Image 1: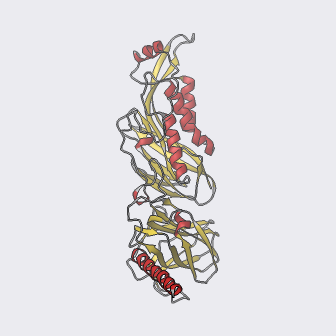
Image 2: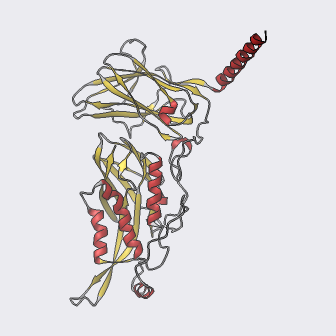
Image 3: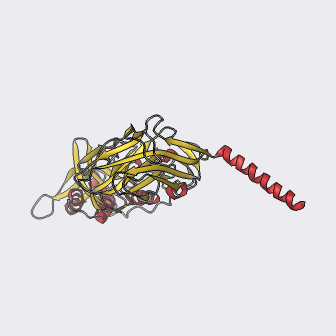
Length: 424
């Protein structure tokens, strides 16, 4: 009798627990062909053609029309990817699974991922057999690294598609099994430090005056570079120029060598900005002219690392300095010539995936000016203007070293740098 009572109590408890969980854990259908069309972000789409949202090529096993259709052909092998904004997103999830039904006319490597309050998550791959419908189910934790998060976007793609192969991908029944946890717009448990992921999985820009030398760094700030000019020389130069830095001709050449280099390595693209700024900051005529380049470099690298090197703040310098030239053959007389420097760099040498967000954050600008330069980034001749306090995603067709062209312009001065990242 006591045993039956105990079993009954346990059963009742399970029923109540299940009922409570059901109240907070509901399936959400994000797309099934019958709902309002979603939107595929055009800026990051590498599918040859935009999706047809309510296609009808007949009913397939486990896939009834209408469904999403993506077709096309390219003259080079590569990855075809796209990120979707769908009805009902953003939405909070509390564990559970993500499922999607897919069918390809060719054998294909299919990958899915989620973007959420914990950032852009992992890509999970599945092999599609030609003309066979597959229902793919993945744990949310495996995609986002967290069971409690906000899902903002859904991404999928075909990877390693051969050249000159016409391929059609059908997609249907995009679902999350357990929604109602984290609230849309909340910060998930996997948010990263500093300027990285905050609400809605977006980069959190800090309110800062870029021309100010004051920054609130996440870690204990490191000391500034040791000054290279004594007080007497500082006073002499201050009487001769309104600029706050004075470089020798050789130092100036070293800085512009990085700026104009066409064959930088990924590591050179990473270290060049800091080495250049270290050289300039040492030759300051007074202390605390600009935000510490050393600390900007380190913090930008930490933010990138916290996102798996998928969100990369671009380091920028927009400042004026004077160059000291010898004006006679005896090397006794000198002249100071003004120079306006625009310089970009990366805090990392490796990108953590084929989709990278470059961020233009005034926090990571070292400048003596009250306005910010215009920035444009180009990857494989595809250029995007990035206003301050924004970020833009770029897709890379393959792994390995990739050239990123960064263009800066300010006060009728324009520069173009060829920087590199190693895409993993």
